[in-house]
Image (tube, rainbow, N blue to C red; front, side):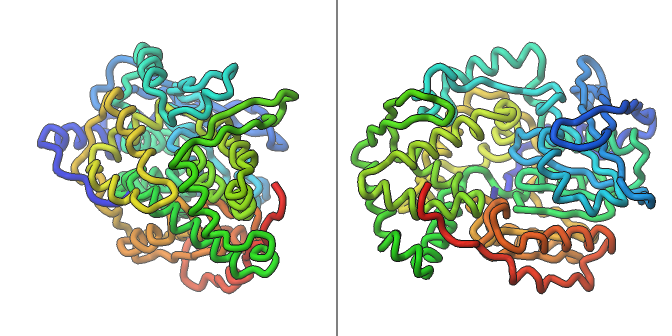
Length: 489
């Protein structure tokens, strides 16, 4: 997501001035009743509830949709009044479904503060815009187009009876979230966003600044990062960084000599013709013959680079593919299509990106940025085709301008993040003067799999407790590092 939105007309400005921002003075405080519940993967009682909001917040007429909320009460005897709200990534992930994986990271913060998980409209149990883009009975279907055009058409037809697909943008959703905040009685809240969740958190900060105490951003996707324009170059940067580390590591370089040259050979081979691979999918007893093309192979490498653990296996996968064994790479491609691309709310992903990102990307710019990269521009081309079939929301012409605030902000970025690189954190910090940007060596889009990761948890806890980045001791960050490279898959 980088560059700036163009002027899109006076109508958009008028629409946006009504659609976003604080609630009208005559709007009653929203009502939200919480009941004791159990959340799978989390020990102890939680509080669950549903807040009804107008799908069309501007007219306040017509269909209402549920906003699903889970509150994990503070565990300690001293409870602070400012809860922490988690903003999920994607776009399309559900915050409440992420809760089991997030609660451990925020365990010390939870000792004194409630943790709140809100499914953004269009995700989870908040009128989800879910689509089935692949056929579970046909393994090869998972290795086709990223956005199968016929399935995108069907998805739109299935969703339009229950949703106006132009009303699921970030700006509108952040007003829903502020209704939840008000209904729960928190005057100020702490924000924690990851990936797309950082964009959502920044938009909330811009629209409702007086209700923000602190902000934590992990892997910054700002409002002017135009997905997927820079995916090729950001992926290439991360790939070359990881391969350089392999070459500098005695064990890795010995096991996988000249790994950068091997990566070039794999690309050249797949550009000439797709690989025919026979694999045994996880959970299956049968062998399956699959076709693996360059786009799928590059996408698999990109998703492996999302985590340090996955990145540690990239040299092994590339080395084997260069030698003619595409099995590990095909396994990875199938895994990510089944467990990442095919999950979450793909309809909501399109409603967001087809309005906030794709319209501002020039095809010739996308093609140029894809040149001489492992990934190429295929993702832009396929997403552009999908967006041509999807209803496009009206966006404020100033939406992509940098968010400016004096609120305390802690920014964290992985050194080899293939989608939200450190440059994004640096750029956002320029208009957030009360911020601190921490770059984690060997880190990726996530940080799991690194040694010394408890440093991150301590920094986050101290930041929220202090309510300031001033005096925050970041010396432990230098001790976070990769444990080594995998020598087998």
